[in-house]
Length: 490
Ligand code: AMP
Image 1 (cartoon, helix red, strand yellow):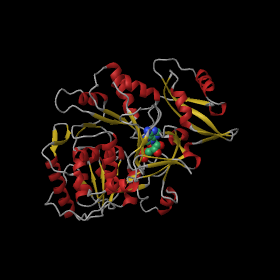
Image 2 (cartoon, helix red, strand yellow):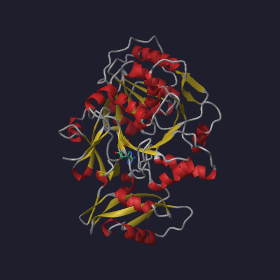
Image 3 (tube, protein in one colour):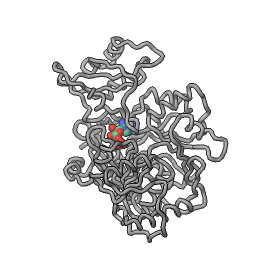
Image 4 (cartoon, helix red, strand yellow):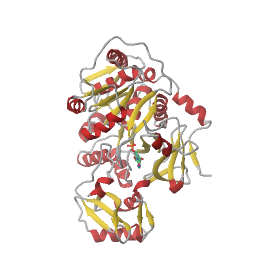
């Protein structure tokens, strides 16, 4: 039997407790205190609740019914949040769309999810109109008297979240209300989120990281958040304010931490009062971990998640935070390794299947109900998980298996390397050839032969890059993940 790591006992009861309740009711708890800020605008809990109720009324007048889907195709803003809470309050489900998506990408998601209505900002409204959709403006949301709270259960549809599609067409993950509740409550527990916290919220709201963790965690914990368009200067300004709105938490992806550290190198700041920095959505290179510790004044907490599975494991708040490892399961979550060391998981926050895609759904779960992530993992003696890369990115070179992340970890250590991605390119002799795509450091001379020699001292010969391609930057998606298909398509 495969070893299972889990946090908590009587996991079924724990999951039921974490999933219980009415999602809009829990997200919209009344209160006089400020809950969200963006620029000069701020909303108290009572105001946010009233806004959501009125928008729910407006949506209902436009024909939105409980169980319908409503897409939001807009850049993150306070109005995005109001639109979202309004549609939840109306009993509808969210289809969040990456505002960077062009027409063809938007078309796929809109055709697949078939929403009653698209809520968009001006640039995206034109695209959605062009695709023949009914569109309303996120800046002028309809308002009317609130409808009665619809009958909602933890099994009600909350969202269809499309996978990032770094390897193929995005699929819609069905997320229910209980999953969002379990996710947000889990985050409160593992990161000790309290009503005293102020999150500097810079992550896109269309993604689970910004929505399920950032926004829901804020609303469920009684804390508040400041919505900021990410730039290192803006983030540092929020984290060093001299008033009672100073940020205590930051969630980011590794490329944000890289830019933040580059900035802090030039403009040192005392961030010692920040309670916690969390990193995820892509691997945090160990060298970045050290750099963060030095420049932010503490070790970041790295966690791992996936749209379909939620945020599933995290380095501990109190215990050792280890570079290159993603830690222990969230409350109620079980993790094990399947064939080829594939990470498999079960938990209250896991999705229900792919929207209108029973074949993909069947393939995604094991017969005993674990979700197959297609990530390759390793479980250490201390029961913590490390991620070794995507199963699909496995390189088979000369008949040997090479996990790109293992090679990347070695090359990242080289002082002349700023960023690296490893992928397999077709090769007559080897089947696939281990290829390193390198962004060299701006301050050190880069020598390809020397880098390969460096790898040879640290890795078996078959894992060493046979080719090095030098680039100015790596192609990354909105969450900072390297788009390897773009690299290999070159
Ligand atoms: P998404 O569904 O967009 O959240 O992407 C999920 C994928 O991101 C996972 O399947 C992993 O491959 C990757 N990922 C997320 N967090 C981490 C992490 N801390 N370390 C390594 N890979 C990660």
